[in-house]
Length: 149
Image (cartoon, rainbow, N blue to C red; front, side, top):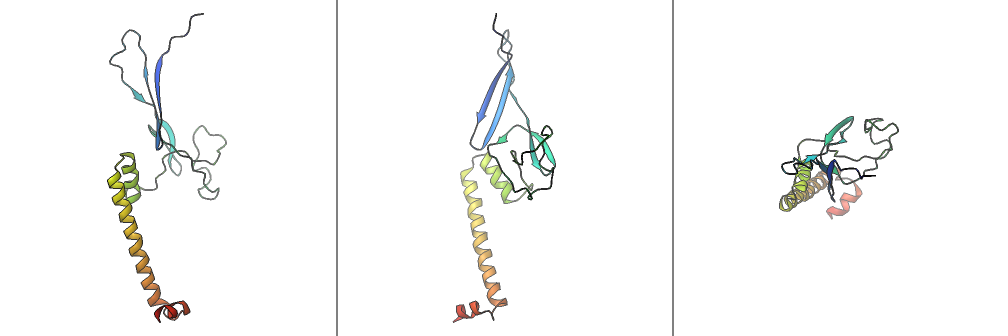
């Protein structure tokens, strides 16, 4: 029996951040000039939303059963959802969290470090501000009286 002739060449990238699958159709008469195609994979991108994306994040999130509304993480082919989330799940379209994701995808280490420093500074300032407010508002509390002496 003659072996079957392959129809596709498939490439799989199992990265630490994202995974991807690409392919191109083999034409044994003309191997040059073939376009590589990225395989789009259906993923949960927001509550109740499934989109086709070419990159699949390389992580698995196991949410608390009460964390998301029932059915909001279901995939079209999943008749009995397992409760695990695999996909790109970003709650917003702007802000520091999105910047971190973009810089991570672009491997922009200096930009990522700048955002993390900004977050650390914001945390330190917020902590100091809340401590000052607490001292002024709860000045009669025994713990605050001990600190003032």
